[in-house]
Image (cartoon, rainbow, N blue to C red; front, side):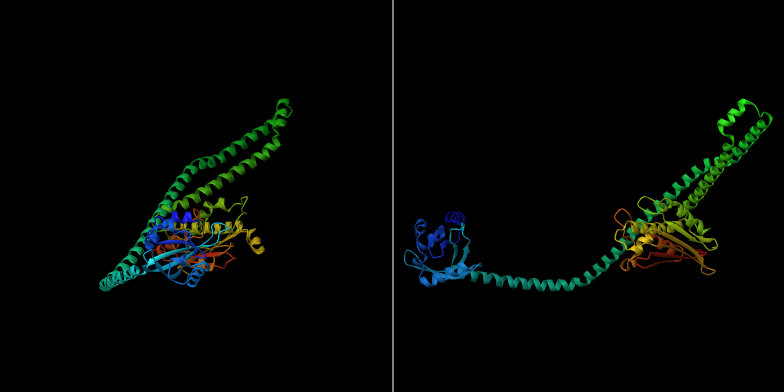
Length: 455
């Protein structure tokens, strides 16, 4: 900082400020300093600080050296002698200012304060502090009284808040479940409509294939008779060679067989679609559990097939002889769909995971879902759905059935599939839904439901 910069800085400040060199020479001052000394401000630059104070030169030098060597502000005391010979005891605060150029020495900024005025201000401050302390005490007593009066109210508010939060969570869950149920109901209605529209033309085609095969057989028989009656007719022989009659007779049988298999497959798909479309049914019915599982597999069949980034997922069924079960078939189909979809997600995650061991890579080459059904006793059956994916971590295992909990990325899962499935099995059917998993060795979901949920 130069003296000119200091003057520009100090001009608007009411406090007495001096800019001095390390040896005590006054470089610049502001107007309040000149007023204290009874001199003109223009007369002060160039004079020595020792000329203006009563302290010894040695004491002043020590103080300035302390200011020069300290990074913090140094407190001191200077007694000024004004032009009339009067003494004014001042409290001083000194701080070093870094040189404004490498050639310049360090400068010291001194701030002066009239000690008498400071003492008066201190007494006034103490008085204000005492008044403030009394006011604080009064407010503290009032706050203590108010605190005692509000303690019970705060407890009640907290209890009420917790109750409202629980109610809000239940309402949010109920709302989400209703939306999910409406989506599944709409899906069931759409699937039922598609199945109906497909079934009509397929049934027509399948029903006419038998007649078309019979008519073709009759026509070929007629051609055979023509061959026998007119064996040497040039026109007929030429046409037979052009159409390759022997190959045509063999291939047309294969064509009819292929078309029959195709229409039967479409009819099986339609049957599965109709079975799955029970999603909108709300009544207890007696159903075949295996049909429900197969319909869910059919819906997910496109995800089981091999794709360029994922290998084919093999489904191994170990079905036991199960009795028909009285249950809510649409909701049970939803459970099968949710658990199977999660198993496929786990196997796809394994295939997409680049940080897997050689053993897991071997498993990844043969992704498998095993479905097993069995009769536990005369009242209960069990359905097990297991995959050989990455499994579930221990810290996640305890939360798999919690509403809105999901480990899938945003947009991939809502965290409601297993929660809704648990509610359907446990609350709607009085059954049990359990998860067993070892990290790195897949996961298994076991469904246990009574044969007659109505009882």
